[in-house]
Length: 105
Image 1 (cartoon, rainbow, N blue to C red):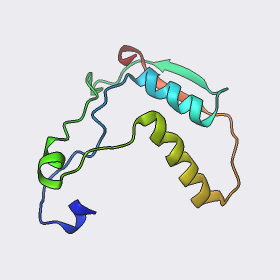
Image 2 (cartoon, one colour):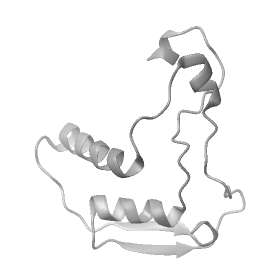
Image 3 (cartoon, helix red, strand yellow):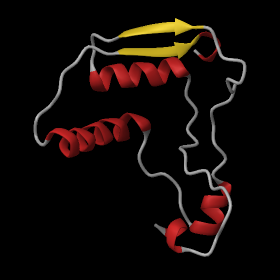
Image 4 (spheres, rainbow, N blue to C red):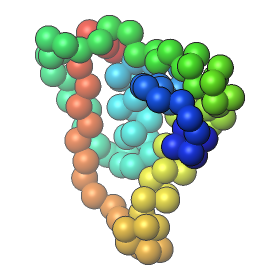
C-alpha cells in the first residue's frame, strides 16, 4: 500500500531475499498442496537465473518494508486464502505435478 499510495516510482522488488533452490520450492509446494504430487526435473531454459535472491534494498530504504513471513509459513497461508476466496470453505484436493529445473536444485 505504501508503494501504491506513495510518491516513489520505478521498479521495486518486493520478493523475499531468503534464497532457496527450485527443488526446495517444489518440495514446499508439494508439502503444502499435495504430498502425492510428482516433482519432475526438466532442462533449464536459456534465461534461467542462477541466483534467486531478490535485492529488496530500495523497498527497505524508501518504503521501510521487508518481508516478515517465511516461504514455509506464508505459502500455506496464501493457499488457504486462495481456497477461501475461490471455493468458500471447501478445500479442494487434486493431483498436482510440480516442475523444477535441473541445475537449480
